[in-house]
Length: 634
Image (cartoon, rainbow, N blue to C red; front, side, top):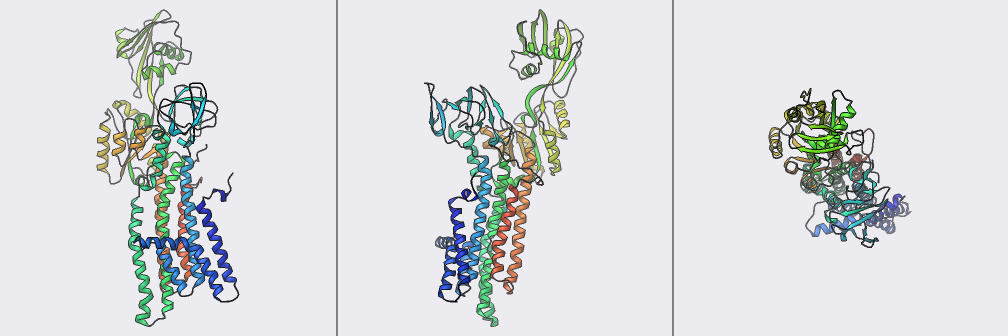
């Protein structure tokens, strides 16, 4: 376990040493018994130790023509304080500014760590499996497509691939936030960054390191902070106007009263210097971007990757969410949802359907096979015939077995057959020995948290929730009722979805988010105001096209990230209002001579530190928060 000191990087440790050294020199200066040049020397030494980075940055920016920034303001104010022999005040301003700068660096590091901890996936080595049945350690960048790798318990999978032998449970928490291990057996697709838990597996590499899931995600997160919000852009523009304005105001404050009203020069110069210290826009420049960076970090802790703070802000403005149905709100896998036997037990009906369909690759057939509670018996099966568009005919235990649609039952004159319907799915009928024995309904089932996710979105103020599907009207209506969605579009072709999303964009003043499974929804994800890819793990198209990538496919992550976006915007606005209010009050107090340099230090550094701490609330794991952050366990 690393100590707090060991967790600091080199620059942070240097900052701590500089702050402590400056504080010690300041204390010696205060305690020095005589007011001599030696006492002043202690103060100057403390000033230079604490303020050298600020003075250096101000000088470098001055050479570049970048005059008005916080470094310039701090340097001008403190050098002025030294000029009027306010030695302790000048040191205090620089010292507390160094403390504030250190807190800022720690805050940014904590926000970044919340992302890097989640994405601490980049493998340092790969174990290449050779033809002579031995292995060699190589760099992941040197592995080619088609190479075989061996991964042992406790090791990270270095590149995306397919398991060729062995089996193991995989810890996918760093990718998905899901702590439940996933079993990987021969033929399973595995992704770089997953951790092998309890077995040794061999993997055939399917992607180079630069194209692997880990590399794409890391690149996406590293560039997330480059996408600025409207609020951040406003603060940048505001600072460019605000800083020259306050410098001019300070100059006016320093010279007008003495020149026009005969006031003491030293009094008004001191007030002008206070004015400069207070006016430094550090709290705004630091805390607003930090709020959004912390929001991205909070989302990342839950396996929700937001490509930029501008998309986090856009999520706050979403009032319409359009869902693709299959693979997004539903599991995208067929299963038997209803069994209606006639004259035979339900288990026997399931078994007969599974026996007939066991060799068919059709998804509905595979669902029937999986639902069979008994071992599938093929020894008594003969004369299997695939009847295109109708079903399957076979001889089972010497008797004719029919499994298919109503048309097949009618053609074969199954006794006592009566067609029925179920809006939830596809009807499969079974006849045995010429006798109709029952029906099964096969459907794509809802994900476990789909209904609760829709309810939560409504409670968050989402005005319109829409479901899109290629299913028929009756099926779409039944699914929409289950979900509690009143508006849906059925019988759609893939190209229809983008047209519909564009229509909704024209009908609202807010933002329209589209949620898809990331496979065939790439155009819609790219065309919506906010594209959210569900179940996009390993899908290159989804990572490229969407603005928000959910590394698991739980619909409940959508209200979760919207809550994070709402809280992020709220905290950013709190920081802006708080900083401007406090500064306005203290600027007035400084101008009329009530606020001294010490109060000026609080108005600048104190407000900055408070704003930073407020921003970091986004990363706090608190049961009272509107969203719950579950750290990924590796």
